[in-house]
Length: 490
Image (tube, rainbow, N blue to C red):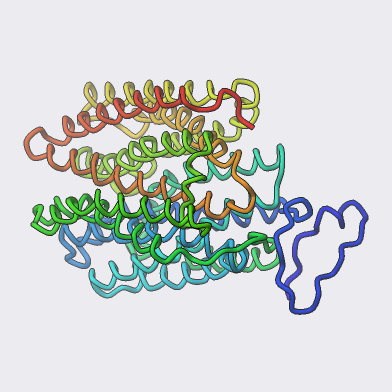
C-alpha cells in the first residue's frame, strides 16, 4: 500500500493509533495534514480539467478542417464537455464525501487520462463529441475532490493560502489552456496537429496519479449520506435545458427543440428547488442543501461568481476567434497574446491572502475596478489599432485584466468556502465549481453568440467591441454585488 501523508499527531511526536484491519478511513480534520507535495499534486489534478475547457478553442479551425465537423459539431466539442462537466460536479463531490475523496481523485485521474486518449484518437467528429462528453464526466469526478481535500486537511493560514493557490490555478489554467493549445497545434508534434491538445493530458494524468497515490491522504465525511437520486436527475435536466440550447441553438439555426428546452428550463429549475427543500425538511440530505445557500458568505460569493465566470468564459472564446479570424494570428500567436494575463493573474492570486486579511472585501472591489480598466484599455486598443495590432500591442491591457481578475476569483472562492461545515466540504466545493463551470458555459453561449451574430453585419472588430462593452457592463454589476460580501474574510 502506498504511504500516506503524516498526521499532525505524528509530526508532534505522538504515535498515531493504527486503524483496525479492514476499517474505513474516516475524516479527522484536526489530525490529517496535506503536505506541500500533496497540495501541489491536487492542484495539478485540478488544472487538467480546467485547462481542457479552454485548450480546444484555438484548435477548432484545425479540427473543422481535418474532420469536416461543421459549426454545429464544433460547438458540441466545447458544449458536450462543459454540459457533462457542470451537470455531474455536485454528484462528484457527494460521492467523494461518501466513499473517499482520495479514491475518487484517483479514479477521476485515471478516467480523465483514458478519455483524453479517446479524444486524441477520435476518427470522426461524432466520436470526438462522445469522447468529450465522457471526458467532462471524468473531470466532474476529479475536480470536487480537490477543494474538499483542502478543506478537510488544512486550517487557518494554510487553508487560506491553499484556497488562494486553487483560485490562482483556476484562473491561470484557463488562460494557459489557450496558450498551450496554440503551441501544440502550431508545433504539430509527429503530425498530431490538434490531437496533441488531448494527448498531452495522458502523461500528466499518469504523473498526477502516481504522486496522489503517495502524497494525498484519504478523507471523507464523518456522516456520509446517500446520493440524492431525484435531485441529481432534476439538476441534470435544469442544466441541460439551459446550456444545451444556448450553446447549440445558434449553430443549428434555432430549431424548435432549442425553444422547447428553454421553455422547460424554468419548470425544471423550480422542480429541483422544491424537491431539495422537501428533502431537507424531511431530514434527508439533498444534493444541494438549501441551508448551505443560506450561509451569507456562500450565498454572496456564489452570486458574484456567476457573472464573473460568464464574462471570463465569453471573453476567452471571443478573443480566440477574433484574433485568428480578424487579425489572422496563427494558433500560437493567439494563445501567446494571453500570456501577460496569465502572469499577472498568478501573482495577484498569490498576493490575495495577505491583502484580503488587511483590506477584506475591498480587495474584490478593487479587483473588479482594475478588470474594468483593463477591458476599457483593450477596447481602445482594438478600436484604434485594428487591423494592425501586434501581440505586444495587446500586452499592457491583458496584463491589467489579469491583475484585476486575479484579485477577484481566488478571494471569492475563499469567501464561499470560509464558513462551510467540514462535513459539507465536498458538496460545497461541487456547488461552487458547478456555479463557475455553468457560468463559463453561459459566457460562451451568450457573449459568444452575440459576437458571432454581429460579425456578418458589423465586421469582426466592431463585433468584438460589442462583446467587450457587454462584458464591461457585467463587471460593473459584479462590482455592485461585491458590496454584499462580508466586510472581513476569515
